[in-house]
Image (cartoon, rainbow, N blue to C red):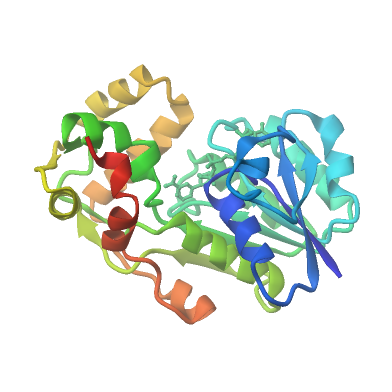
Length: 293
Ligand SMILES: NC(=O)c1ccc[n+]([C@@H]2O[C@H](COP(=O)([O-])OP(=O)(O)OC[C@H]3O[C@@H](n4cnc5c(N)ncnc54)[C@H](OP(=O)(O)O)[C@@H]3O)[C@@H](O)[C@H]2O)c1
């Protein structure tokens, strides 16, 4: 029986992957959630134990002493680089060295759209490192997560009625992190994905004027697309104490959108899962309370 270790198990992708795997009817695998805090509220939270059956193991990328125990008996690994871990030589490669010595026979890495061609991205360096390893791997490159509209832009929509995003008139094709998680779960549990690289997007590319209009329709008040200059956006996010390398990555992605490089649609989600990815309109409807006054 495979033992699957999920890193970033309390985050957007990790938590949804654990839930997805544990909700399957037939489970010929064991799931281990690698967490920094064994009492994390998302793990043992109030609402019916959010990950009821997951085995938890203490794990920190910056604490090599946690690596060996976390990898004990593990045969498959979902690798997620936390946004705040940008020095990958110091905090991710030593972990991968330990993985190389373990029983792991397949690594699925959640990278990001464009990482294969953008050397500035920390995920690019991880992709390059994985290619030098002996263990087979699969790379998933999702487009921007819909959840960013909550975590990064939620407050400005709720308080200031605008989307403060430097993407000009460019398009993006948002994907729901839960759909990325479903793909990750499939790649971890079904054969034939070793050595593959998959870009995944949502259903439809759209510009931020259209997205602002969708918020306006859903919330019943006008939400504008503010379209700031990149430098103003960077200053604003620094003021919010977001991690600088993450702000730079985000700015590059919005710049790519501005230059027409994020407006495509991938069919990978449907090919792997047999269904359509969630739509942005449904996501905005589902989470409307987040942006209500
Ligand atoms: N945002 C996007 O639009 C987007 C799109 C495509 C790809 N990505 C990629 O997705 C990745 C981030 O995934 P995510 O959004 O699922 O992450 P996330 O929601 O930010 O969660 C980060 C996870 O990593 C854990 N973590 C933080 N620091 C850690 C450390 N030092 N050691 C061990 N675990 C640690 C956190 O645990 P705690 O709960 O303890 O903090 C949490 O479980 C990044 O590589 C990013 O490039 C993002």
